[in-house]
Every structure is written in C-alpha cells, then in structure tokens.
Length: 91
Image 1 (cartoon, rainbow, N blue to C red):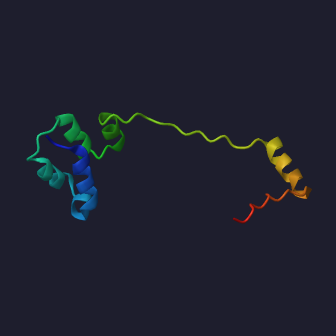
Image 2: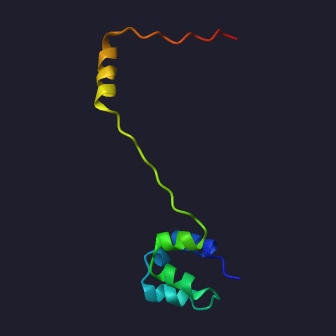
Image 3: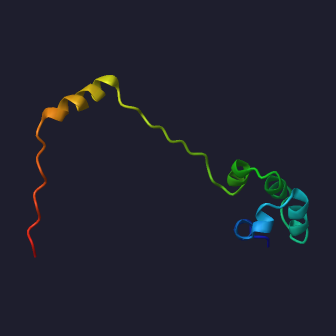
C-alpha cells in the first residue's frame, strides 16, 4: 500500500525530488499503486486539495484589533505606578 505521508516526507528531504518537474514526479510515482485523484493532487502541487483528501479540515484564525477607546485607556495608564510582582522566597 502506498503511504502518501512517507512519500511527501521523502520528497521534502530530497532536494532533487522536491524541485523536480512534473515528469520526474510522474516517473517516481509510476511504480506505486495509488488513487488517481491523489496522484493528480500531488502532481498539481495542490496543498489544500491534498489536505482535504487526507482528512484535514479547513481552519480559520481571526484577530480582533483593539478599538480606539481601548487604545486611549492604555495610553492613560502610562502615568500610573505599576505594582511590582512579589518575589518568591529563597529555598
């Protein structure tokens, strides 16, 4: 059985294979039995499609920037004296 992860790992470690043309990758995959859709995704270098085929779902990261009034509050804290954290006792 063809293991896609092992192939991708070896492809990433071998500089000649990593930057190989599609023809060279086809020749490397020629002797391996695998799903034709998977072969097409690898040859197209479609990372998202490969992730979907391997079961990785999409993810999203949202960063909420500070509002203007929150930024103003941070500026007004500059004049305040901040408490120093208490020191741990020596053992």
